Amino acid sequence: MGSFYVENFGCRATQADGAALESQFLDRGLERARAADDAEIVVLNTCTVTEGADKDARAMIRRLQRQNPACRILVTGCYAQRAPEELASLPGVTWVVGNSHKHLAAEIATLDPAQPAHGFVPLAHLSPLGNVIVGDIFAHTELLAAPVFDSANERTRPNLKVQDGCDNRCSFCVIPYVRGQSRSLPLQRVLAEVRSLVEADYREVVISGINLGRWGRDLEGFVGRAESGKLPTTSVHRLEGLVRAILDHTSLEKLRISSVEPMDWSDDLISLMATSPRIAKHAHVPLQSASDAVLRRMHRKYRPWHYRQKIEKIRGAMPNAAIGADVMVGFPGETDSEFAETQRMVEELPLTYLHVFTYSARPGTPAAERTDHVPVARARERNQALREMAAKKKSEFLQTQVGNTIPAITLRSVGRGFTEALTDNYLKIKIAGTLPSNRWMDMRVESSDGDSLLGRSVRSHHGTQSEVTLGATQKSNNLIDLQPFAG
Image (cartoon, rainbow, N blue to C red; front, side, top):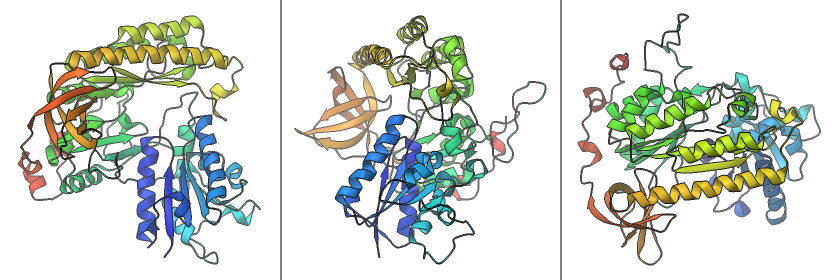
């Protein structure tokens, strides 16, 4: 019996793929090593969203060569799909497996070299670079799905990927070309996964995807926009339908929704989030830029006024919600006045936190071919300016919470007799005393240090998951009837 270790790079979707990869290797009888340096097979599950992500993967390969030279390295993920021969040429790499064949990674790594697997032909037969196994990602229909956990030692907040791939073509983004077309985890499978997590005593589940708001559009039975321009006649296979199904047919205490593009924040989704105490009051809405000209060059599908309208609707429905955004600076051609438009909108909108990124050219994307790239020093200045603005907005939002009582889930004990928790509205809070993890409690916020909250628990949520009212279909564990969600 051999040992393996999976090292993940990048986003939550990549981490979810990594959890599924671990299951593959465990199912084939291998043991999980404590660290990459101790493993016989090391799987590098890569990201390629920026040049820095590529560098991190290459650095890890070099480190493994020094510290665990006997290990066999399998490189998979988005970088492997984008530039397989580049990775295969690096010393120490045994296999390169694209996202197209990631679902066969464990089989490939444990296969008898004399036996072909499922009819695919390793490109090693055609190339001296080793086992390079990459196929057409747009023909790929597999969706790896396994829960990911924020902490390996605490039973809290699993993340469930319910969607993969993207049908958008933003001019700066390589992700559609390495993850393929949008595809969804079927509703019954999502409900089964959530029920399993509830049965294992998890109290909060985060649903996520590469383009989460497009969940269900590829599933059989979806009714799209009619030629007349009317809205779809059913919401079963839309994100709000998925959310409503989870609420109605599982006993999950708290559902948290990951990043959703502006155009997918429907009025129904906002209303559902605002009115259900079982949905975390937390909206992440990517912005990228508040300049209309920059958004058009990015090939984004919304305009600044549209984005502003969505954020104001979310804030109006949920006055205490956390509202976050992704913002990119230094996109090719971004002028000082265009950046100033982004600064103004960020300042004016009720955002509570930002993820700020500096543009990174990705080979093969339209933006990379432009010649009007922003100087690195100027892009860094813009990045810093937005980070300072974000820190100020976060501090101000934290201060508004002082004196409030907010539900929070306990995460782990930290130094000096404190317990760390995460509030319903996505704020870290430290609680005096050592409390059990994975419990929803009402927390009284007593102060803020500018980065997190300090408080005390005032009462536990005594209701158990089994006390959540369920429909007869859930109680009998039969397949749900989708008809109630048609509207």
